[in-house]
Each structure stands twice: as C-alpha cells, then as structure tokens.
Image 1 (cartoon, protein in one colour):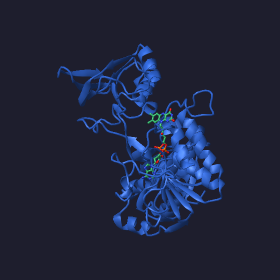
Image 2 (cartoon, helix red, strand yellow):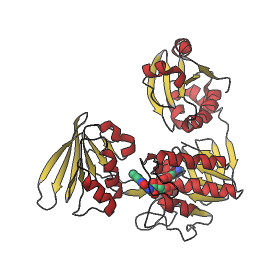
Image 3 (tube, protein in one colour):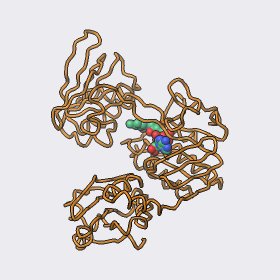
Image 4 (cartoon, helix red, strand yellow):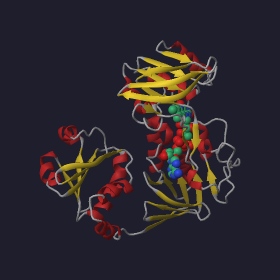
Length: 416
Ligand SMILES: Cc1cc2nc3c(=O)[nH]c(=O)nc-3n(C[C@H](O)[C@H](O)[C@H](O)COP(=O)(O)OP(=O)(O)OC[C@H]3O[C@@H](n4cnc5c(N)ncnc54)[C@H](O)[C@@H]3O)c2cc1C
C-alpha cells in the first residue's frame, strides 16, 4: 500500500476521516475481484491527490457496525467526506478512475486541480492483442491467446463478466449438470483468464479508439498499442421508447431481473416482452412477486415452447397479448401505472403495478467504432467465418456479431 493510503478500523474513523478536510474511504472485502480492481486505481490516485485528500481503506467485514451506520452493504463502496460530513454519491461495484477524480476535483480549486492533473504520468502499454469487452467472448479469446503465448489485454468499460454475470441461472452451458448461477460462471471465466496470464483494464473510460492503428487511450493517461484488435463488446437492452421509461429507469423500471427482482417480494410486477428472456426472467421474478403480468405486443409469444410451458404452469404468471405500451407512470414508491392499448379493440387501460421489467431485445455495442466497421442492417458486425471484419487486423466475436443465436456457447465458439 502506498504511503498516502492509510488502513484503519472503526475506532479511528472519527479522528482520521471526520477530522480531515477531505477524505475518500474505500470499504473493501477480501476475495472480491471488484475490490482488487479498485485498489489498482485507489493507490495511484492516493499518490496524486495525497497532499489534499486522505485516502482511507476500511475492511468491511471487520467493521460491520460502522459499515451499517454508513449504509454500506457491499464491497467495494467508496464514500467521500468533507469537513466531517458525507458529500457526493456512494460509488459501488465497477468504479471508474475518472468518477473518483471528478468527485475529488469538485472540492478543490480549479488551479489546484490543474496542478494535480499535471502530476499524472502518461503510460504506454504494448500488447499483441487488445480485446474490447470482457464477456464470455472476450474472456475466451483471452484464454486461447494466452495459452498460445500471445499477450492479450482485455479492456472493459465495466467489470468483466458481461451479460452472464447478471443472469440468475444458466442451464444450457455444457459441462454443468445442475443449472449454474450466471455470476459464478462469469467469475470462473474471468479467474481462468487471469490464471492464464490475460491482463485486464476494467471499469475504464475509453477516450479514443483507432481501429486502423489498433491503439486505445484509456482514462486520459494510458495508451495501449496492439498488433491486432478483437471487438467483443456484446449488446445492451433495447429501450421501449415510451414516455416515463428513461425517467423511472432504476426507480421502478428495470432491464435486469437478477439485479432487481428481490425488491418485489409479495408485489405485483409487469413484464414487457414475449421472447425467451422475457419468459425466463418472468419465471425468476415469480419467485418473489405476488403476480407477474407479461404484456406482449403480438398474439404469439416468441419464446421457445419449453419456456412457455413453464410460464403457463406458474399460477402467478398471466398474459396480456396484442397490447401496445403507450406510457409508464409513477405515483409513488411501488405505485406505478402502465398504459396499454388493445391492438384489436383500440381500448386504452392502465395496469396498476409495483414495478416494470422490460425485455424486448438488444442492440449491438458498436457506438465507439464510428461507422467504420461493416455491419448488417440491424447494426451487428458482419464478420466472416474466421471472425475477420472488413478492417485488417480487427476481429469480432460474440453477441456483437450478426448471427442467429446469441448464447454463451456461440460467443465462446466465435472467440475460440
Ligand atoms: C437475461 C438474459 C439471460 C440469458 N441467459 C442465457 C442462458 O441461460 N444461456 C446462454 O447461453 N446465454 C444466455 N444469455 C445470453 C448471453 O448472456 C450472451 O449471449 C453472452 O453474454 C454474450 O457474450 P459476449 O461476450 O458476446 O457479450 P456480453 O456478455 O454482453 O459482454 C460484453 C462486454 O463488453 C463490455 N463492453 C460494452 N461496450 C464496450 C466498449 N465499447 N468497450 C469495451 N467494453 C465494452 C461490456 O461491459 C461487457 O462486459 C442471456 C442473456 C440475457 C440478457
């Protein structure tokens, strides 16, 4: 640990943290990959800001009472304190270096910020292959490269793991007799990649990408130069595009059942969509919710028969078909309304619900590539059978590619 980062227990909290003009506190745990990732940012920032800011680490499990008093329930959690009072947001999970700097800079004069930023030393990293995205595709590419003694660096804007880490259960990935927790599977893949020597830059800001030169600029100070590049950036949930959706995202509207279903214990939930994700995630939500109403725009569900049969056999789940969503409203916590129009009769009604989950498909993450990469009509990368894109030395794999089935098996197959 650098000299500017101090580790304390609860008994010194008042003196060290509340007694400082400015302090940032990292509540960490052991065996916590996101905590290890944060440590790689916290300590260098301590060297830059250490004269002005107290950088403090507190072992969460050893200081449970203090953590509880400060409403810290996960690791890592970063809290900021100014003159003995909490300021700024609570940062958790995959925390970016730029986010920490932004919240520290807010409490320093512009001149001092310029001075401190001037101390940041540029860094250059050279690797054989840079992989954008650390989901199943990116991690598999890394494992295969590393085992071939080719230096691979995975760069992810979030923590590695990809979509699988938010999936409650994976039952169709070969090699596991019992269904596997998605987080566990992605954790194993990440650790396997690390054990093979794959390097990572996680929860980073990508300032610039040159597909032609195979270079990246990260977090404003690091340049990565590679000989080849693999795009494995996956896809993200497609928004519904109705009034209220953006406003209440994270406040009653969710795209992730694993993350949020637990908040709907004994409550009524609306699920929008009719494909496999919508039906399978509804089955998961039904473990918590009192009722789940699946609203789908056409007459037939698109999910496979097995998933449909399970959902139809679950008494908590009901279906509203041929309904178009017009708006989502919020009246209070767990008090929402979904306005739907019956496509056959034209009648408009409002469904009362505690929360809304949207599963209506995905869009590829290609925004950073500025239209230079050839895609199909839906924006998915049009790679050839060897995963070569139209740009020399640039390959792509996984859900970001044009293909029929977007699954873990197909993502890892592309990458291999
Ligand atoms: C709810 C749900 C349930 C599912 N259940 C199953 C299942 O049971 N079985 C199954 O086989 N499949 C399942 N899938 C599909 C499976 O999760 C995907 O096919 C798989 O994750 C694709 O892997 P990927 O590596 O291509 O992309 P992703 O897993 O999406 O990973 C992409 C990674 O790239 C990062 N990234 C994005 N943009 C950038 C950028 N510009 N620069 C750098 N990094 C970036 C992201 O942070 C992410 O970590 C499910 C998907 C969902 C949504």
